[in-house]
Image (cartoon, rainbow, N blue to C red; front, side, top):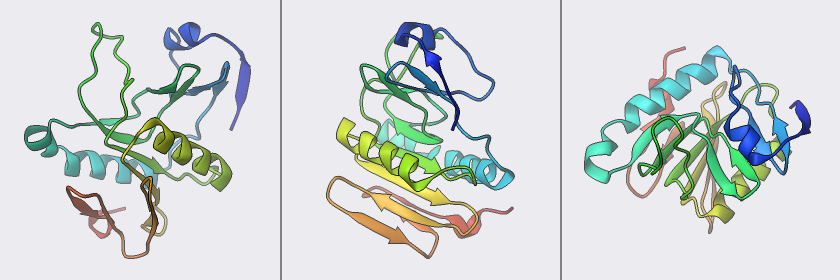
Amino acid sequence: MVVAASITAEQYLHTSFEHDAEFVEGRIVQRPMPTWEHARVQGFLIRQFWPLEDSNRLYAVPEQRVQTRPARFRVPDVCLVEKPSGSFGRRIVTAPPYLCVEILSPEDTMTETLEKVYEYLEFGVEWVWVIDPAYRTGQIHTRDSIARVSDGIFQTDKFSVNLAEVEF
């Protein structure tokens, strides 16, 4: 994680990055570059979530800025959200997504990942998945529980996906 000098939230929102960064209390936090396996899981999840748009009015988006607090913007690898309001090209998610997914990269630490998980849950996100693409394992977090996933099947109260179907 590389942290840049202090800037304002407004400056962050008007800045683009080659690989979008997060904004935490006045600092730009660079995210690790995704690996092939990370990208494959991300694409797989988007394809699996696409049918939910019609039935649940949830939109599957990769790397969408989510404002979890006034001075915090996170960028989950994938999230399921209701369509945000705002002007074209300036929409950000300010309401809790239904699901946020963090796909681990080799540079990610558990401390940083859990900080994001707890932040999402405090913000009101119902489900948070942490996926280790190397082993197709991870965790499912809700406000009330943490479940270990060892069989590759990640689920919510509405659907499940099986990471065994991802081809690397």
